[in-house]
Length: 427
Image (cartoon, rainbow, N blue to C red; front, top):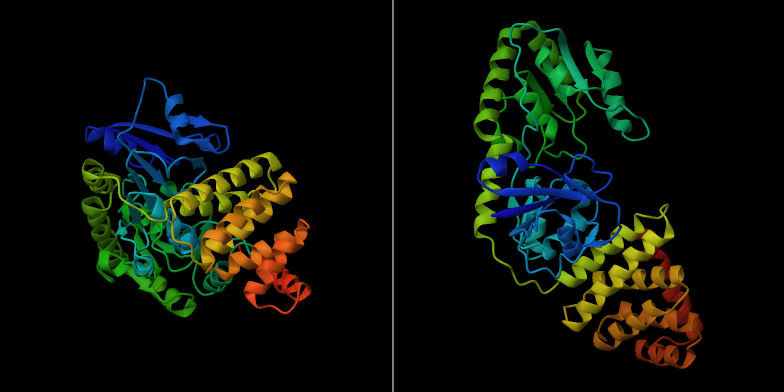
């Protein structure tokens, strides 16, 4: 079977070892991929055509790069698709919609699965893994406790405050660099999360054979590992507890190394790239196209997210993303996908942004069509009224005002403009 990996090259070698023909592709900033393009909003069919050797995948796997999907056509393709989201703790709102587009979805953060289930989605937990093999160094240690990562007050003031306070109590080496060079030569690797996520550092530290001292976090940490047997936990931001544990294990290196070795043994048994690739391979071999009643509007919302994250980019790039947004909303309208308040809000923003950037009224015309088809959505009526007045269509605005039961056009415009400004700030 042929597999196309988008955005990342995770599992490429492992899938090849399992008998798959694999290509990796993405945009030019991902230089580690085999095939890169510098064309924004490229259709997935065109991307496939650009891969040498008449490569036509049997499955497309989109791997999370903490951003919206930057290709079009994934809502149209007949090729089965898989999404693996790793940053739900940052982007759960976006992933909610991406899960509607793909035929099968994984998440690395288990605690978000109930949210997806509330939205009627089936998502499988597949935790992260040790991203590279690291040989341990049990008998030669150069460092006591280390933290490898950024300490930037502007980006993560809580982390900086924690380590500043911790270093006043016990020696801790805080630095940046190649973690695989520091971890095996350290007695203890300290991990701190962003939002109690189950992050890569957990698996990487344990792979090195060092004792992992990590926050007592969520997302399945203690379902995978036993506290005191494979790792040691401390309560988030509890400086005194962390310092006490560091001092204890520095004073008892044999115990620290025993736990470190047990942790590494478990990583090698269950949490390598090959282990994850084997599960992915099972899904690839059996996956079928699923029916989704929201895939086009979900793709539209993804494209809108991309457009609005491109505020400082070339306006032409933003316009391409907004054009793709309106196209997917057109499909959503054609296939009569259900429209709720959240979809209506995204459509209002897309129409506003497109018309403002293009100096046209295409977005407004689409908004009117949605308002006609989904007349029960008050938000669509409010958006259509505001745009009608901006385009000088007073008679149409008056009709909507009467339907909404608002006493005057000036009141209606004031209300609609306030709502639009709120949405522009939120989305």
